[in-house]
Amino acid sequence: MSKVKKVLIVGGGIGGLATAIALQKVGIKTEIVEKQKEWNVYGVGIILQSNALRAIDALGITEEFLAVGTTHSALHIRDSQGNMIFDAPIHPSGQFNITGGIPRRDFHEILLQAAIKNGTKIRMGITVEMIENGDSFVYTKFTDGTSGTYDLVIGADGVRSKVRNMVFGDIEPTFVGQAVWRYTLKRPADLENITMFYGQKAKAGIVPMTKDSCYVFVVTAEPGNPWKQEDQLHVLMREAFQEFGGLIAELSEQITDPKEVVYRPLETLIVEKPWYRDRVLLIGDSAHATVPHLAQGAAMAIEDALVLSELLQKDEPVVDILNEFMERRYERCKFVVDNSNTLVNWELLQLEGRLPKENNPNAIVAQSLIRMTEVI
Ligand SMILES: Cc1cc2nc3c(=O)[nH]c(=O)nc-3n(C[C@H](O)[C@H](O)[C@H](O)COP(=O)(O)OP(=O)(O)OC[C@H]3O[C@@H](n4cnc5c(N)ncnc54)[C@H](O)[C@@H]3O)c2cc1C
Image 1 (cartoon, helix red, strand yellow):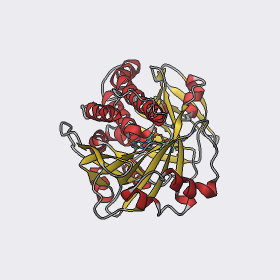
Image 2: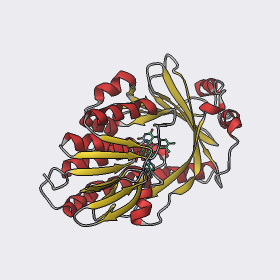
Image 3: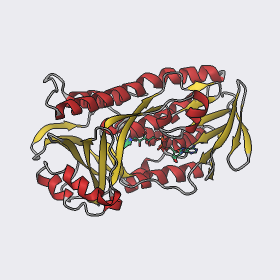
Image 4: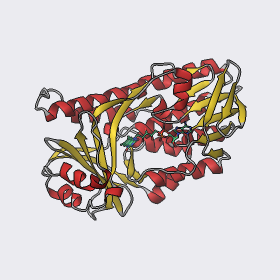
């Protein structure tokens, strides 16, 4: 066992909570500070690819996931009028040959309850104010006037990470030129799998989340990242669906409440390796934030947590453990970020009718998801 016995995690999102669960399981005391006073997880759902399902199984929460979420056995890609272009069974080489969907709030609640049950101390409404990083411990002051000393501090505070800013300097995400619109609806009775629809101006999709609910999404080009009028979001979202026919068009008519529209400009970021300085480590979106084209961001954050907890059980100097963490995580996360960005660029070229014929987005999706089934 390494000398790391007490860890501070900054940020109680998917990555922070997964890390707390994994570390507490191997006997490392963890504390989370979360800047929100109360949990405020946004609506709609999340896709958990087969490697994410494998990771949540390792965290010990599969039963809780299955009690709420749903699973899918194929990915269907259709044209804008619903004709099948690509019918891919989820690759059977992985340990799990299925993907999952679940409302984000429910998934967060499952992680939160597991972290609490494992003994994680969680403090809400505070963050780090000062980090004194050293080669044998980290001294931290918090915004509520308290302070603490830790063997390791983990920045799991998302794409706009304060920890990253304080310890690594000024590294900002890049807007990729697209945004995604999402809306929760009643699940059509015969909808079994994630279905995507490729149009000329946009890409849309339907994701089953629970036995009764699904979400619809549409990805649009948004050059310059224009501001959207909040009380018009439902109208704008419906407009984005205009070129689509069939089921997705029918469902889009049910988009009536602007407050239920979740609109997100898409950003990307990868911090150059290593993601640590002395005893401060970045994980999840604070180190590698990706656009959702491969639906791998949460999976990567949970995998970070599992690899770290595995390595911290070794009786080795912290620097060696963190170097090994980088060897295990950097290329895999960069692969996801790079391939997701390639998909964005190809979709933008496709819109302009300039995508070379040999560039096949479906092939990149399939190859990437097959690679992600590899055991970490
Ligand atoms: C539109 C969209 C759709 C996505 N869909 C999918 C999907 O289907 N499947 C998938 O696998 N991934 C998806 N992702 C990616 C996934 O949401 C993220 O990769 C994942 O949430 C990363 O978890 P995280 O814990 O690193 O960061 P976050 O989930 O962002 O959590 C960060 C936490 O830190 C807190 N925090 C922030 N600053 C501070 C601070 N200074 N001090 C203390 N706390 C702080 C925040 O309040 C939050 O609780 C999607 C992303 C986007 C943008």
